Amino acid sequence: MSAGTGDGGGLFVDGTDRGRTDRGRTERAAEDGTRQAVATGPDRGPVGGGAAVMFSDHAPSDSDMVGTPAPDPGPAPVPRARTAAPRGASSRPEKRQSGKVAQRIVPYDLQPDVLRLELIELGDAFRAYQRRPEPDLAVLAELHDRKARAFAVWGTVTGDASLREEAERAGAAARTTREMNANRVGVDGDGPVVERLLTRAQAAHGRTVLEHVRAHAPLPEAEARLAVLMLTLRAARAGTGNVTGQDLTGWLQGDAERVLQELADVGWLRLPEDVTADDALTSRPEEPTKVTVPTLLPTEPRPFSFGKVTRARLSGWAQKVVGDRKLRKKKACAATRLLAVYTAAHSRPDGRLGGVGEDGGGLALDTVASFCALRPEDVAEHAGLLVAAGWLAEEADTAGGRLRGRLAERVLPLSGLL
Image (cartoon, rainbow, N blue to C red):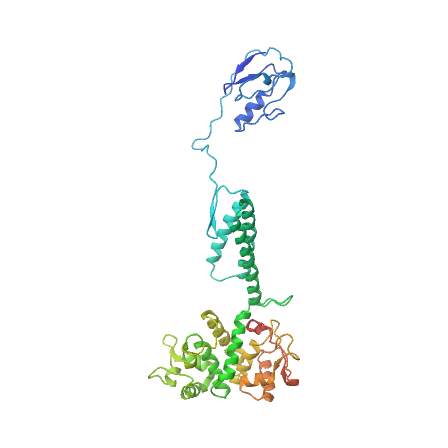
């Protein structure tokens, strides 16, 4: 047997074509950048002819020779040159990416790798959500769910209890966000999915405002009560609010100046100095009239507990009801518009009037009439006008002292989600 020195400083075994060892395959594997043996064992093993493979980067030992000697191999071949790495290539491993999620740094060496990548992607997804022009609670709930799962695994692999606590908080946030979304779209069981203008909480605040107006309106007629409702929503937070002539005439048509003056005369409303009711009717959006409702000033007992976002949402909701195109087309009077507001605020997600479990269903006729400045026996007539305007989907029933009916499908986005 003849042995020669390999290109790594070790020994190799070679012979005739019939008795060659796996040297050729080993060299080809080295040229491909691998350093693995092609023999049967992890380092070396027996091959044909009784000889053993010894790697060119492995020093010989007595155990490297197994079996009977091989035939005289003849002249040793010249070792092939090693394949050089491409110019500019780095021998260092690729730098692993780190990131940030929920104010926490994701370590670049976090294992398993799929967890590290999920946490990085999750942080990017939360930041992308914050840049959205409009919120999407369904998307946000899914992000919280992903965070709960990822942080639970992170806490397990690192033994960090604070990460597991963060996972629990994310799970709770996902449930809360889904509940908020259900309140917003009004999904009850298999009911229709409708994008609602108000959440259930906001609608409940709206009913508080309606009851306040019913109990504290200073004048008995429907026109004054409608003005009181709309101005109360404008001034609910600070006791002051801006109105334009277009607002006033949209609410009250030709009665606007008279009603505004009457409210000022009884002291419920204060106009700025040197501003008359007629001046208020000519005010434009760029220069609105700032009116004051003394009973709603912060120095007085607060009848409402909602914030500025809810106030704006409620004001916009009432404006949509009062300014409904079909109601305007039918020239609905103030009492009919008040009935539209009341039915929208006191309806379920499917549009039926009254809450679940109320006696006989529907709404108490006396209470409805009191809010709308009507006699109970006149409510049915105005309900019929709402049917004609496509506000109610069916003829209203006033038997047994209760108003029963259902909002039309087009009105469902304005329903109060009882």
